[in-house]
Length: 443
Image 1 (cartoon, one colour):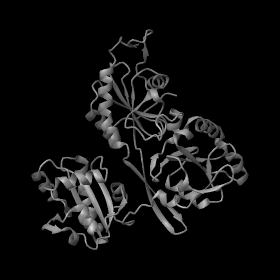
Image 2 (tube, one colour):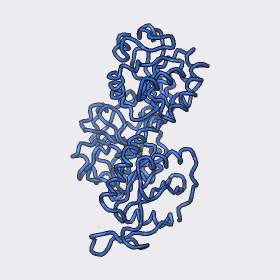
Image 3 (cartoon, one colour):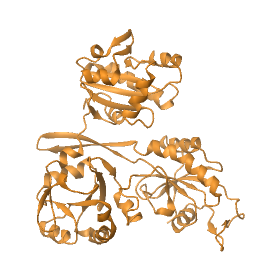
Image 4 (tube, helix red, strand yellow):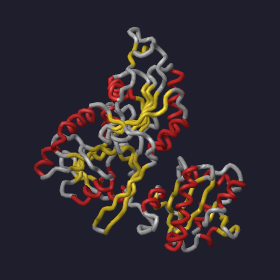
């Protein structure tokens, strides 16, 4: 319990006044650390729902909530807390509030972190857990971590030697989910690995979906890295379920701590086969000149600004960056799977949207413009300025579009002209709330 006092301080604010932290949180099965503010519209909507869930069900199950406010003044804090039936960090403890925001890497509001009764994090995406299970049927929503599955897993090298997964020396490991029918990509990946990626510090572990052991042997013979034992079906099944692998090939980049760095390693490697950006942490804003990025994998907000000057392009990228950072790790998928010990639930954070800027004409941008019936853009012959085929140089404003290739090539038109952080965010929120008209890319 001393850990709780270290996290929250000696006292917390309750409906009846200040209360000692250790007394307020005694015998609680879980603690929801709720970061928000009264000025945040999504927080107000969530607070209303969360209050109902808490009063009707979750409090009785053993959940306590501690609200950590980012309100601008104490009057707003007092008014907002008056609507809430749980505890709150005192507004005057601003230093602790900032420390908690940093400690739990809060990037936006609302955010909910679930702790156990001793203050240990058991779910970093409590918002999704609560929204999907408001009655607490799976309370306290404890996630099962990837390192636990990989602990003790055996990997085989090409010479037949066995190693513990944890003994791999690389700076990061790519879990390569594949089967013999993907051998073309396997050979391409092997070429990149031998030429550059191995020397950058990448290990690769083949997680086979081959239908037979002879197929596995034939496929692994093409691979200059390691593989999970073909017979270890339990670990392979757990990894596929935990990481929600739906199609092959799939490359998932994992750090030394077992945390997933990039679920879309396939696209990252194809865009950067020499590993200049290894280990390929997703960027808040991708430039289309560096490759397709995650365009084919997730909904992508694209700012077309090839006809704008360099200063304007920089301002557009700066406007997109905070929104991109907000959504960079905002989606959580909860997977249920079975091991020898029973059923577990695992929460994996993935990139919900990609944000891309197009600053110069290229084949990908030209194809997208054509398929969305946008004006085409080309460079002048001397390359010193941009010439727009419609209207002359400099007369084609920037344009936001959202392309959803996984949705059978759907796209949505956004605002044009001056692009600010507010216009980007509002465009994404309008898409989330289904207020935009879906259109179809041309074949």
